[in-house]
Length: 605
Image (cartoon, rainbow, N blue to C red; front, side, top):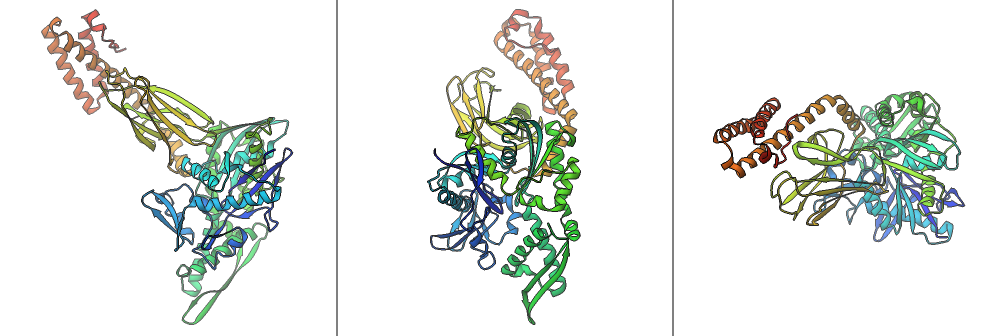
């Protein structure tokens, strides 16, 4: 049997697992550890160091040692301006390709290349452990990764010599590892709080059928944020005592960053710890030291603004799933940051039940990935996974209307097709604007991509059939195409970057959409009335142009005056006047009966 592996490519640590029989097993690295630091060192030349040895160089070689790269993969420079300030290496913009690069001084590497080195090392561990070459893998990602991040992760795996069987969301993978071969039905909440991101997913488990009901999250919230919070606290404390800013010394900053992570981990089991940073900085009088007791209560107070950001996605995901906290039977904690006692306390209080403690939050995602690899290759046939896309997707049509093709929380993989037409006679091309959001007005949603379909059949409006197809694969990657069914002209685009959606923005967007239902209803009503009025006006104009000799000149004058009034109403957006003049116009033309009815003008009802 050909071997395959599951990989949890984490922000802080990564894990690789395989199936032994139908049981997932974590593969240790060469140091004997079951997790490998997601850190890459470029010492020079062709040499690359990955893992624990690289992590030890973070202080000594801060500009050549890359950590937390997952926060930058698939991102554009403008999207990570604040996050970039939290790392020691130099992020620069590749102006030609509008992407991020890491400037090592002697060469530049992309986040995908750095991630590929981590994946390559994990693959090497697996090949050595299983004594065989491995080319297939399932890679996990945060549920709220956008299309660009998903594509970049897949590209990184391919650089590492891996064929990506499937990309699967981390919470879904965790649920697979937990629920495999459990002969019962239950609702599971997977609370995934890792080093770089936070996801919350609701899944319905029915024997070996895993259906994702809803997902939410924050791609800018993780253990790194907590570390940075502690770093800023220590920085201010040092400034108070020593009157110098550690930010002036890159190595001092990295030492404080390492101390911050250590403090966070220690306070998960201890009530207090000591911050000890000898020789942290120097001034005219010589080297300075910093020592201070730091309690868990102080830590909780300091990090509370971050902890509070965990709640809105939990509320939102339950709303999307049509559930309440009491609907949830089991809560799974995933990711190292869930070891923080205050986080567990928040989860328990919100869901009204203790989370499960019998799964390893560091390993469960990789184990689920290995199971999914077995499912995808047909080795495991009893498991069915139904994942979802978290946000509605569609296109802009006339009058600033958002036409949804794929509703939010639709199961993936999926495809959706709708037919559209032209709005102007002899139109030679159409502009396809792809959007993401929940509002009826197109301009109120996020723009994802746009392209122009040319070469369509020249004909009167409403005659051409333009077929728009949205296709989301099992990895959650979106492709959009438009085809003129008459001429066969076709244009396709792969969405390279969904705009990143922060949790607070998502919750605000959903609430805004819910709070403005009446406004959207009124807007859509005005759009429909406008379309009806325009249909009447255009039809009457054509009727007059082609039958002028058969129409009473007085009626022509009357209809033309009404058309002028109707056009004025269109200009100012006066819906009531549109309706009034459109009724009058139809009434005048209607008396010509058969000749007028040939133009298929719909009466105002």
